[in-house]
Amino acid sequence: MSDFDVLCRVLEEMDPDTYNDLLVRKSARVVRDLSGFTRDGADAVTLFADFILCAVALDGRLAEEEYVLAKPILDTILESDASYEDALEFFDGAGLGDPEGYKDTMDAVADLLGEVSPDLKDDIVMVCMLVCAVDGSISERERAWIRQLIE
Image: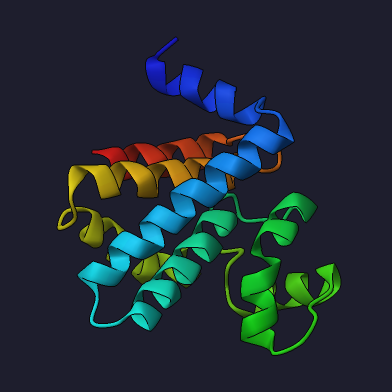
């Protein structure tokens, strides 16, 4: 088993308190560091929100755990208190169930990783892994995309 597979397993089995702490710390650092990379902080937050939604969509479905994680973003986008059903409707309507529906955003994230510091890249990849692990499993499709980000 590779180190990558071991890390995936650790994240999949992480207790909720540790998971939440790590996700909050890494996310805050990513947004802070992206703010220095983009024209303004709003660009960084928008980029981070797009990134989170794409990571949620990697396996082509919206699990309830992923909905809870993405709810603040969805509430902002939908300008309402989005229910799980609202989120599923948005997910399907936005093409997030089909990888081609968000390919341009994913390509932009991959391009960005080539321009940022190694530490920021590591943090972005870790946030992606945490988002993918929120439902207790990092699928093979998610693992393949994460490997591409790492390379």
